[in-house]
Length: 371
Image 1: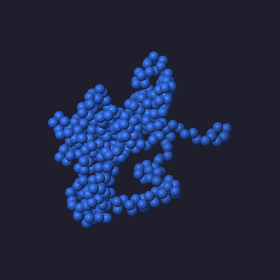
Image 2 (image 1 turned 45 degrees about the vertical axis):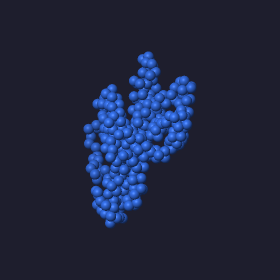
Image 3 (image 1 turned 90 degrees about the horizontal axis):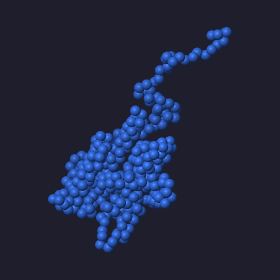
Image 4 (image 1 turned 60 degrees about the vertical axis):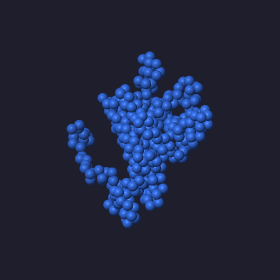
């Protein structure tokens, strides 16, 4: 106090702060019961969950029929518990479709090889030229197992089905659409009017039509454009259609990343005298792709789910194989819900893995930036 005047107390740097509520109770008070409206919503949600979750768990797990059981065992508890015996009974058809029964160990190994390639590629320690050789070997083994030859009985692609077809369409769709999408994104930002215009037309036209239309066009037009006597397998037609379709969406995701890179990065690269492709490959694209990870992975997830649309051109993908496995057997047909729940679980596992990996990769790359 100076000259009788009142001065407000000044907080010092080391002054103790008011304690904050911590622990589960503090978190709940802050996030769930902070206002009367939040309290009502929280209590209503808890009441609904307490009513639904026990019933769902009882139907899904506790009263369900597990393992190899006859359909009569499921009929005895129908309405009270799920019949997971249908998955056990129809598992091989769901996973491999109409692939020859006595040769189904081959697509099973192909699934292991493809999933192994994905796992290996997820580790940064393998991000070197050796990874390309691993992929070449893995792809060769996959098609050798699926198609036959060199000691294995040949199997036409019309007999391929189930999860291997879904993985092949998704993995190779991503693998080839990604570089094409980058080229389209660069083309759309090109200073050459012809390249820019062609890229814009391609991207806008493809993004303006549904995938079903592209699949139909690929199935019909390829046959018309090829020379007489030449034939392309239906699986390859679907693969090309998926690549061309997804590339347009990836191009827009990458273009967003390119626009988000600060202009100073472009100017600095030009000041160093780097040619265009070195500038893009060494400076601009690494930053743009890191920024674009969320929309790129979103396109990957959409592609994995959209592979189920190839059924319209007669391919036995995983979703269609699950549907046909119960649809063609009258005794198990009434348990189609359990079969579809199994397919949902498989799709969810792959999509969730992609989502979590993208989140980890995004954080890891950001951490490397700030070191």
